[in-house]
Length: 229
Ligand SMILES: NC(=O)c1ccc[n+]([C@@H]2O[C@H](COP(=O)([O-])OP(=O)(O)OC[C@H]3O[C@@H](n4cnc5c(N)ncnc54)[C@H](OP(=O)(O)O)[C@@H]3O)[C@@H](O)[C@H]2O)c1
Image (cartoon, rainbow, N blue to C red; front, side, top):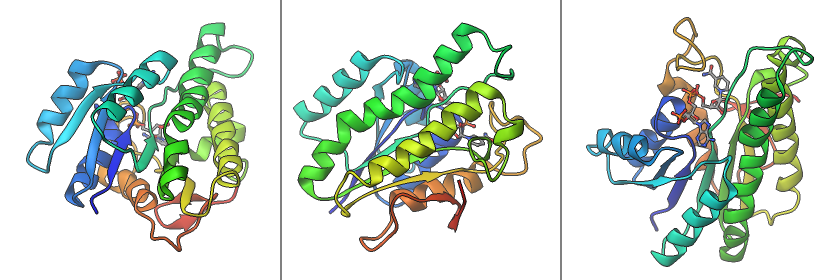
């Protein structure tokens, strides 16, 4: 059976490349963005790889998540794979970051993935199959670069990693919930000096999205290697 994946923040960067690689595996893709036109443009650009359905989903706007979920139900489309990719990064330390930066980072990087999980994971549990991938970062890991991270980013990604672990213990083993750090990737967020291409960064996310039934859950990966918290 062909699966369906929903990717947030998929209009550019790693999210768009994740969509491309999923389409290459014949997985149906719901390509979401906070701006519908940008999502439509990205879906058009990927049309030679397969059909991606563009939809508006602003992870900071709970109503837009619920509307998107309701539209998919209406169209009879089940989301089997959820990829929480959308995020923002502000370059400031804890006490210098503005209230707005803290609020945006908390809402977009943490609340958004929680809300999308609440919208799509119960149906995965009911259907007894699901894959959730939360895109995290070495900046959110104590074992890597949390100490030197941009504060609002590092702290919210650390919390998203914790949420991944916690949720993985609340769902049946047929629903796998993992976190993937793509490494330092050349995107608008990563900048042009980053070591990795979007293809390399997306690979591990797609791998976690397509894990076999005996695959792991509650883990953090870079590519196919486990990372420590
Ligand atoms: N690049 C790296 O080196 C790197 C390293 C570690 C982890 N990551 C993670 O990888 C993921 C993708 O990053 P990237 O490098 O591809 O970043 P990017 O090029 O900056 O893309 C970020 C995406 O998130 C979207 N977004 C932001 N706020 C949103 C919202 N409220 N609702 C929906 N979408 C929203 C953006 O949409 P707009 O176009 O509308 O702004 C854009 O599509 C992120 O989770 C990031 O933290 C990246």
